[in-house]
Length: 169
Image (cartoon, rainbow, N blue to C red; front, side, top):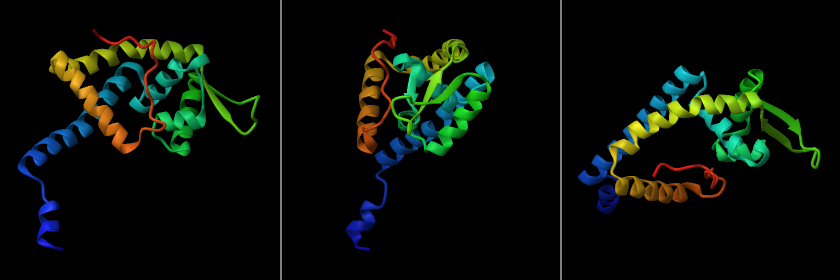
């Protein structure tokens, strides 16, 4: 390795401070969200995300491939989670009548109720941990920053909230 390569392989003090904070948030925030959803709704954050994506979809139905893309999940991980949700009658899978090669996942009435029950506590915690700790301008900038990072990772297939989702003013 050259001296330039060695220098590039080390953090600047500012980078280290910023990255340490981001890395900590990436570990602690999902754990906090998961704990709240498990306690209040008996769902993992991943399962809630699946139910929420279906709740936002047209006719509350998505193909399993689209759902895997939205959840950034392999089809096998998604299939296991959907099987658990099916056992609770929250989701139903069926073969697409228009294309027999495609499996559709649809949110049941019980699944819609589960989303409605889980959402208030989830929103309250997200507000407490994220939005209440930032000014309105910081929250906006945080969203812009997150979108840029998402885009640098992979913009295709990432889940986006539907226009009908209300945002806190």
